[in-house]
Length: 241
Image (cartoon, rainbow, N blue to C red; front, side):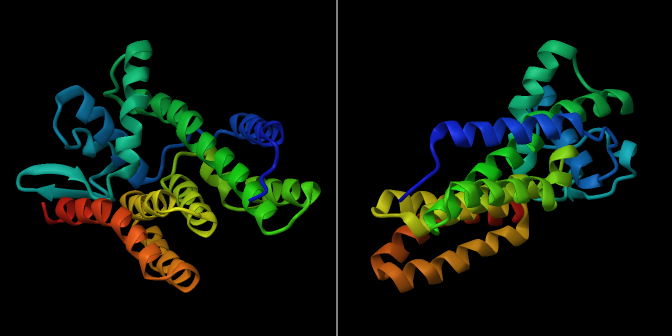
């Protein structure tokens, strides 16, 4: 498989990241983002999976687990936010007010949202190269993805969609370029993990299953399914709870 040189991909990543950083939107309006920030901070502060400040966003996208308020959306973004909050807490202290959540949101947007979209642009470049594009075509594909699609919006404010998009494109590239079962298992694992971030993106697993079976047969399909089962089972158990 041909991929762009590491230096080229690094330049694409840094270019996208700088532009995203300059265009960060501090407004925190999406309730799904609110619940992810709240759940991550609550897990670090209390050791319990819950949301503690749902009154700040009028209980939108909040579910109940018994008597406990928890995040309604899938938990993937909140789990990714946990180490981000650990760093934030060590430097800036705990979040408990609307203003402190706004500040944490800006930090998380830069660390997760912007980085995810910038990395996805590099994956677009690599996939374009595998499909036969030359250096210029790979560069244009990456830049158009980074700045000409919703990836730009999702990088300037924290959303779950661009994190899910990064997982999906990596899973797809692994699946279509796999030459051994470990890569197929990893592709399945990522495809299943996509559903932990945003439910619809879990459908990538079905698409990859068709592609892998058509290209490489039943054993390859079994490896993909083996990787995809644990995260999907975990999501099913979580939603049942």
